[in-house]
Length: 270
Image (cartoon, rainbow, N blue to C red; front, top):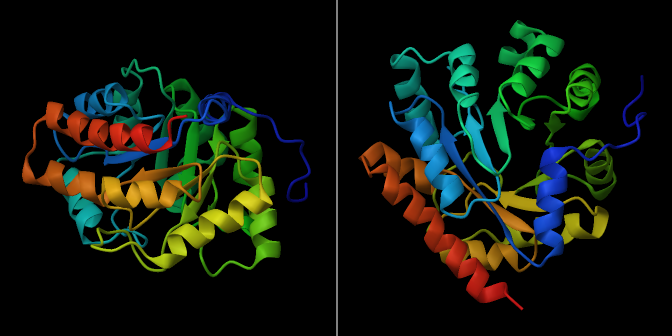
């Protein structure tokens, strides 16, 4: 099978995000590392209740190459607690929220489980999307085929350095949404927003009708508004994970997301 051979099928996550976007809402996708705290499942519920349009859940991994110090610390904390991919999916199966769940992981975990088994395990756990950050477009066929069959959206990433012709091919193969990488380098909070974050949003919206969400380096409500002006939404990771590592309560995690939701709605409503 060649890349893009199958006709795109909009799954639950894509339909959900498209519907909200098409009603004029800017999308907000917070990230949490699974297992980083005993109450991480409650955090997922609080993020959904706080106004998230989807929740990204990171499966802890020993060599998280795209993650900066904050999410690395959360991953290592989760691993020290004995968190495994099987445990993560088992706990996610108990989450009853009205927004899609999307896991973020690395290909070693997918490969070890097996493409079909992993895709089916995600679906059985109620997960409707997967971001496999180190799986290149050229090597994604086998995984994408199994994910499509399991109705799991494979979300692909486009970096600021990606040429337009390659970005178009990535968008054509992506499902759910397209993840625009806001800046070169690893995840982490920044005091100022990189100019590449808004630029990659503008570029991708010219290329694809899929929802375009920008993450990596988006750290505050102000930056979220700036990015959302040129995209369909934002992914917030390190700023939330840092607060969770510092011990904020579950309710405060929901309030953090809620404050960003309110700022987006106030800026872009109407």
